[in-house]
Image (cartoon, rainbow, N blue to C red; front, side, top):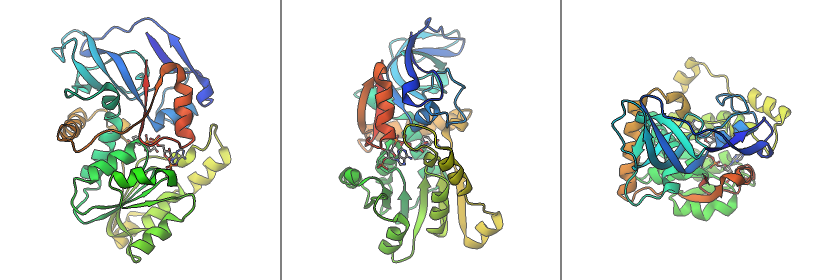
Length: 339
Ligand SMILES: NC(=O)c1ccc[n+]([C@@H]2O[C@H](COP(=O)([O-])OP(=O)(O)OC[C@H]3O[C@@H](n4cnc5c(N)ncnc54)[C@H](OP(=O)(O)O)[C@@H]3O)[C@@H](O)[C@H]2O)c1
């Protein structure tokens, strides 16, 4: 099999495609011949040595794949060999063959391409889980979403359309604002040229928002908390502020870590605010919950309510260019890798 290896923590240039013996499915596992694999921001951070959950290099990362089942381990009844599936891989997904526990594999609907299917698991699970389980968004509320034009951002926008009267503010570079509006973002904000908090306050007449979905971290969590109305919820789900450019920047990392708000339950109580966290990678054991949420997303795809937006597809050999596209903030939607 072929896989994309992070040879050391050195950014995209440390990536290499290597050959190895084909993996054999263990009891309870399914082997998938991968047609497309999702590239996540976490994979990009792992390549820079900024993602503590990732295995130590040399390693193969990758949380999600789509392809065809080509072998079953002992005791596995299905999905049958030949089925078109998507799968959640706890690393190791950036390979042309992966073995994964059968419960983490789901058949994909007829008509869904492998590229689209590879863009579903992480983005749509995270978006669905945050909106409907953790933030429990209600009709008529206001929501602020950061990294709105990324893979998760677009998934949040599409799912938000199922909630009547939900108004979304989204931060992204100006060139991406037309796409955001088309996806249902009422107020795109270019955070490069405007203070997004001031802009939210201006548009809402100083009221702020009910929900902030924040994958930036550090000082932005602080700003987000201050924007919450009584009853508001901040969902922390990433720390992209640690990544900047192609390499690690220790000073920037230290400043961002110092910017993390230190809040007590008493303060939350007095301000009627909630802070929650979501890390889908740490929900790996909650198979039933994840399967239910994924099935709900696939049903929305079949109803034509959501449609993963593929930004670009890169062959494995160009994995470094795929990562640079994200690091250089060029992507609108999901970046996908194909063997
Ligand atoms: N907690 C979880 O379970 C979970 C799961 C998946 C992802 N995440 C997190 O969610 C966030 C979004 O992930 P994603 O896969 O949707 O991202 P993505 O598609 O890779 O989005 C990248 C875009 O984000 C914007 N951006 C803002 N700050 C950035 C920075 N410091 N470096 C690079 N780009 C930056 C850029 O667009 P603009 O120029 O328009 O801003 C860039 O094009 C990440 O922080 C990721 O770690 C969390």
